[in-house]
Structure formats: structure tokens, C-alpha cells
Image (cartoon, rainbow, N blue to C red):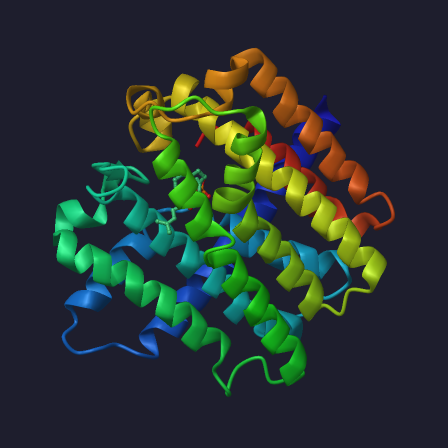
Length: 308
Ligand code: GRG
């Protein structure tokens, strides 16, 4: 019991430490380029620093660390990509909250971007974040120890995950499925793209920058596919059973919009079991990696048990 508590505290310190590193890097990269007029910078800053958990950048860093790349120089090489992942994720949330999509008033415990800045600036803030992510990953003064072909491959993996075959395609499937019956297979496909693609890309990019061999990459990808889906199931469950005050956004919205979700299709208990099974499969995929993959194992637990 005491050992478990200590392990949990250690992991929470790990998450906090990485979040601070990512937040500092995001501030640095953003302030390298303050635009005129500053309104768009304010809108970007507002959403980027609204208290996100930084799961995707942390997964990217943890994947690289699992392969032995956890030194200070390694951080400098990985942080532009880790921060770009968070920028893309934040853009997707801003756009997802818009009246034309999910029409949400709160995100991360504060009013959504369009509620504060208006729809026009919220759309542009999302666009700016998406563009900025690719500017950041292609900056010649950063990631100087990574060979150009590897960097290009990482950018291409992330671009595909964000694009029509990934996030955007998944979002279109989600919007068009509202109010309709769907099979479990369609739900898997939709969430593998909408939520899973960027999570998988975070692990692939982290592995790639750390020089993963094919076996290690395979392990990271299997882990990524399984936690991507379990992340979405946990999110669906939080929308049914979560505490609004902890979540920082409204609950019950999926049901009222007629969204196709895992709890709607399988019930909460079965969905929870499925999330745990996927988590176990994710952890099992890392069996050939040593103790340096421990944060990834703990992250899988955190993702299915999170309250926000
Ligand atoms: C608009 C192109 C476009 C895509 C939107 C990501 C997405 C697709 C929609 C978000 C809706 C949603 C709640 C999806 C479930 C999974 C998810 C992305 C949850 C939020 O991610 P967290 O928990 O958020 O990592 P924080 O706030 O911690 O960053």
C-alpha cells in the first residue's frame, strides 16, 4: 500500500515536471514570434495555456525517454515536436467547440475561445495554432542534431494524423453520425481517427526522433493504438459519469446531441471493461522495453483512470 502510494506520487511528480517543461517551451516558442495585431496572439495564448493536461507532448517525450533519450540535449530535439502536437490538439479543441460543431461554452474550466473572442477570431486562433505547429517543426535553428530526413518523416506522420485520413476525417464521421445508429466497428474507426491518430503520432514521432529500431517502433505503435482507443472510451465515460467541476466542461452533452459513444452502444460497465482491456494490451506491448518505459506504463493507467 505504502509502496503503491509512493509510486503514484512519483508518477504525479513526473507528469507535473513534464508539464512544466512543455509549458515553458510553448511560452518560449510562442514569444519568439509575437504578431501584430496582438489580438490573435492573445487568443492563441488563452487556449494554449488554459490548463490542458499535455498528454500528447508527454507521450512523445516518454516514448523518446523509453528508448534512452532523456538527456537535456535530447529534450531540445524533441520539444518542438512535442509542443507542435499540443498546438494541433488545442486547435482541434477550439474548432470542435465552435457553434458550427459541438457548440460548447466551456472547455478546460473556462469559457471557450469563441465565447471570449468571437467566432471569427476563434476560427483564426485554431488556424494559427495549426500553422504555427508546422512552422515550429520546420524551424532551421531548432532540432539541429536530428537529421533532416528523420525530421521530415516526423512532420509527415503528424501531418497525416491531423489530416483527412486522421483527425479531420474522424471529426467528419463523428458529425455525420449524430442522431444515427452505428455499429461498434464504425465507432472504432471514427475514434481511431478522431482521437487515436494524434496520440499514435505522438508515440511514433517520439520513437522516430529517438532512433527506434523496427521492434521498438512496433511496440510503441501497438501501445499507441490501444491507449488511443482507451483514451476515447474514458472520455465518453466522463461525459456520462464525470464531475463537471473537475472536468471543466459540461457533462451529458453526448447523449443530448445523439452522439454515437461507447457507453451508448455497450453500456458503462462494458465500456469500462473494454478500456481496461485495451490498457492491459497497451502495457503488454511494452514487455520488451526496460524500466525506462515505466512512465509509458503508468501513463496508460492514468489515461483510463483520469477524472478530467
Ligand atoms: C475540429 C478538426 C477538428 C477535430 C476535432 C479532438 C476533436 C476532433 C474533438 C474534441 C472532442 C473530444 C472531447 C474528443 C475526445 C478526446 C479528446 C480529444 C479529449 C480532450 O483531450 P484531453 O483530455 O484535453 O487531452 P486537455 O484539455 O487535457 O488537453
